[in-house]
Structure formats: structure tokens, C-alpha cells
Length: 330
Image (cartoon, rainbow, N blue to C red; front, side, top):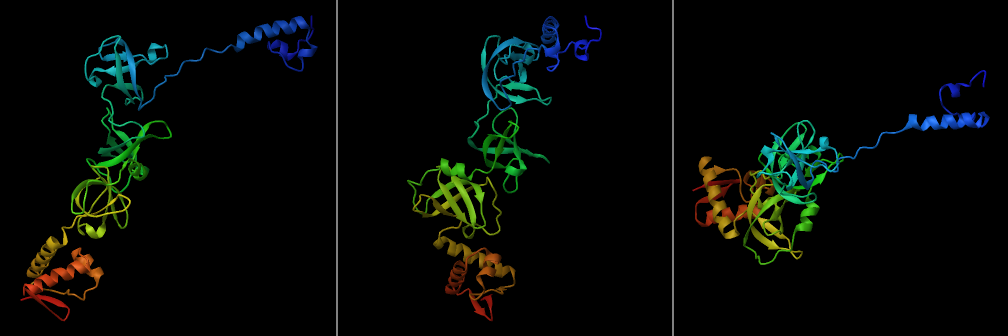
């Protein structure tokens, strides 16, 4: 019909500008052929679960390795393995099983009947399993430790240390934990009640400032331990558990805490410590009532008032005297 077919006709395609110049029956034949060539394959149903999910799935088949759970895609190749080692009790086909979903070493979705003790968004006091060059891993009770990025750590973190963490999902969607829990603990706390000055309370450190340490007690109270009320030579760290004396109850329901004994007992303890020190130094030390408070704090971990009370106690017992800036045993 055409002596010279246009290029679009040879290729079996319709060019939008040439369509108008093409005889109707030729154009119709070309359009009939085009959809067949451009037909798309049906879309696959994605697996609706991801690592970190806790879901209840149906056992659909069994193998020598364990049971396979229905992934909900209609494709058996997507079924999720519940290995025999990850079963807390035997399962059979048809059972609906609560499981924790995680990634195996080959990055495949795998299931475990060992469920985590924390849910996404919750706080927990958890043990650090390991610290690597990539970050730490924390035990939340699941089959695998959960990632603690270096950017979410606070202070020095080491294996077997217990710390306060919050479970969340990172940008990639995988479960992770953070030690930045200040606001969450404040929300979870309550005002102190049924407690009085002098009582002992137990708590764990969740935040550290230049001035001291914030603790979350077993009764969900927030307490603050000023550095002057903590032993000077003792290094306190995140997650450390302390039993402290209530020194003051604030109007907002928080507690001021102390690791020092009450003044009456501290007087005797401090005086004995100074006396023992002078005995080790040949019966004298180059410190007295006039020594600057900064030096006293650095050398003895005492306030100047506590230092002077201890010296006064020793003088009253006629055990020491002071001369030219020195304190000397009698």
C-alpha cells in the first residue's frame, strides 16, 4: 500500500504526530498490538511485617528445622521460619503463635517465641550485652540484643552495665534503644509521698550533670544527689544503683539525697578519718581551719564546715593542736 513505510510503522509503534496521517485501519492494527507488548506483570504482595514486630501468626507447615508461619502474602516462599531452637514449647500446623520478628545473619525475617519485655516507646532498665565499634547491644528480653547507637549513649557504656533505655525505631525501621530518657522518666515519675527526711531510698542514675546526679527511685520518685553529698573519690556512672538518705523534700515533690551519714554520725566518721591520716603522715598534716575550701574538698571530699567540725571534735578530745598552718597530733 505504502511504497516507503515510515520508521514508526516498521517498529510497530504509533508516533503521536504521525497518527493523524496514518490510515485508520493501519492505526487501529498498530494500537491493537501495542498493549500486548507493554503488558505489566502482576505486583507481588509485600510481607507486612518487619524486624521488631510482635505478632501472632499461623503455623502453615513444618520441616526438620522447625515450623513455617504464614507471612500473609499468599506466597509460600515468604513464610517465616520459627526454628525449633526459638520455640518455647512445641507447635503444630494450625496453631496461632505469638512471636517476635527479627533478622537472621542472612537478613531474612525469622521468628522467635521469646518475646521482648519492652514495647516500642517504653522505658526499661536493661543490661548491656556488648559494645562494638559500631555501637552497643542491649538485652530487652528478646531473641537478639537491640542496637544502642553511639549517638544515643551517655557516659561510658560497658558490657554487663545496666542502664535506663527507651525502645524506638531508627530511620531504617529497625528497633533500637536510646539512653536519652530524661523527659520520659519525668513523665513516668510521681511526687514523693509517705517518705520523710532521714528515710533511705534506692534508685538508679539516669542523668549526670556538673552539679550532681539524677536518680529514679524504686517508688518512681525523682531524686537529686549533689556532688558534695557523694564520696569525692567514688566514680558514679549511668545506671548505677544507690541507696541514699533523704536530706530534703522539695515543694515540687522531688527529693534531695545524700550518701553522707547524718551530721552527728558524720562528725565522728570524719574526725576518725583525719586522725588516721595524720597517724600515717607521721602525726601531722599541712591543713588547718584556715585552709581554703577548694583544697579541703579536693583532698578530703569534705565541705569546709564538715572539716572544721571534725577538727573541733578532735581538739575537744585533746588529740590535736594547730601551729603555723599545720594540724598536729598530741
